[in-house]
Image: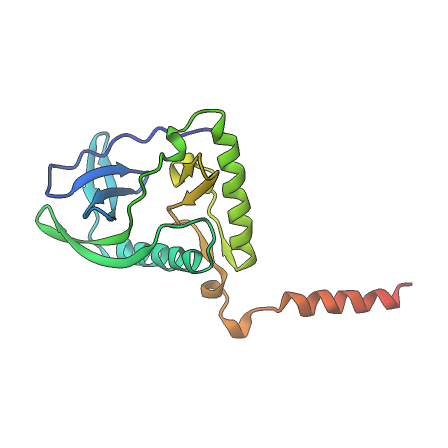
Amino acid sequence: MTIIDVPWVKIPQTKFKQVGNGMRGVVFKISPQYVGKIIYKQLGKDKFELRDDKKSLEELLHESRISKKLYEADIGNVPKTIGVERLRILGSAYPTLIMEYITLPRGDKINHVNLPKAIDLVLDEASKAEERGLICGDDVRNPANFFYDTLKNQVRMIDFGRWTDLSEVYPEEKRINMSDSVDSLNSLEDYKI
């Protein structure tokens, strides 16, 4: 597995402390219990800009919906998500995903002994999510997308922008009931030639 070293997105000093960033988002601590994620775009080698457009709002709303479904289903020990609000920062009000602040070490900060254990736990949680129609993105194994609690041997998953909710892709009336399909296949076994 390749770990991508994401450059630190340099944002001017604000009243909110920047606590991290990934390939698409910058995370600010907005209160003792909560952080906010704002999507950015890269303009050049070391030049970044926070996004304040309809597409970034839609992306954060999608991520919020996935996160809330996982949280309610108790899958992935997902941080509690408040929702998407506008955060006034750097002279504008940016769409911001507000969620619980996690103090555990992120997967890319843990040692090589714990990393394989943590990734196995992430894949177990992703499998549970799949059973509920929430399909993980290809970045689910990325150590920057989960935190690991060595005492509880538990992961806390984050970053669901690349996940798919099948209930959004296939509305109820178009969805196939998989148990009916299996029953149909089983009944065909009676007619083997």
